[in-house]
Image (cartoon, rainbow, N blue to C red; front, side, top):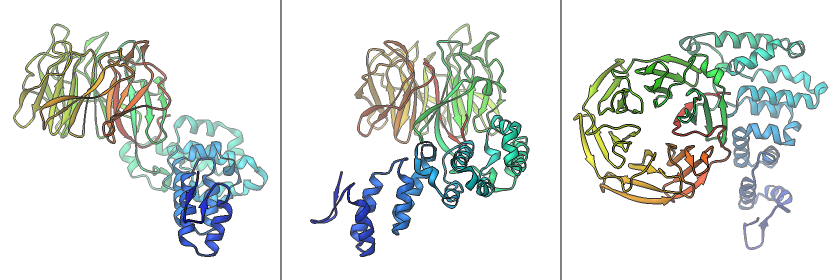
Length: 484
């Protein structure tokens, strides 16, 4: 736990508090920079605020910037776990909560202010009006706003908050177009959108497809969106064997079947507004189909119409809102994958042809046969990443990761799975593949794994889903705010 900065001076946990002031006083730039790097390596939610004060005191702007960014990134952990948070001055706290870079729910910012105030209510009450100006009430969930509005103690101690709450209710009653015209900093989302993984659907039960679970890559944690909240705009939404794709963070759910029969429906879910709307219906009802999106269009293929399995395929032009048939696949496919790569669409596997692969070129409206999969797999997961087509799992007793290179025209084995999975969800994000749920030797899995092709490394994600799922729908979207 040390770093040598010369042949004579070593930075340690024991001497850092005396060494940095001395290096600053004597203007020993190399020594001061080494101290700052040492502290950066020790950053944690429990100490980042103390390090920030230390950096400001001894004129270390680079360390100060890193500490502030760390506190903004880990604000939730900082205010919950750091004793230093409660010792912040009002000015120090205001500097942090006024930042656009905080990656945390506005309600949690409000909760942190109340916690800070409760630590010394008599002294700090006079600062609350200034601090609450920085809470973006319109971005707090409607349920929490109602709780605050109905709380006599909250409004009695902070009557000026009533205007903030009314502003929030007004904003939330507007349409999306009207919200874009709404003035003021309090309706601006902090830190911009962040990438999250949404997991929903389960072909092994009657769970509603709209029961979402969320993995936040930033906080490395799982969360849920309640069925009731989501189902408010999609009552009785329990379609089975539907298919899913994402275009501009809108989730398109196509086909499947319900008690009413085989569906042609296209439902569109906006996770940022938590609202549903209907899209143009497909030309043919399908379940067990596969879909993908490419260049502003959505492609749907295969599946079954309830009488026979299908080789037909169709495309939705999102600009015109119209469906049209495209060239049929060379064979019928049911419960298979459609994957886009290099401006082409790949149809992989399925119950009828588990080892065959075909590619579709939209410009020529034609299908081409490709080399067979190395093995017959049951319920493998398929995804494209960095010009390679990956097929993972398909067995509960282990299995392997295979990839196909369009350049070489060959399949190859990359790694072996220690935890067998079949019928899992698979999605790509920032150079890695994420396997979610599925079936293992002990039944439905609640875990998820990350595969890094660059080092052929498999690691398990922190935490786990609330529900085990087979054939879950998994998508990556840009989320503007929390779904909780």
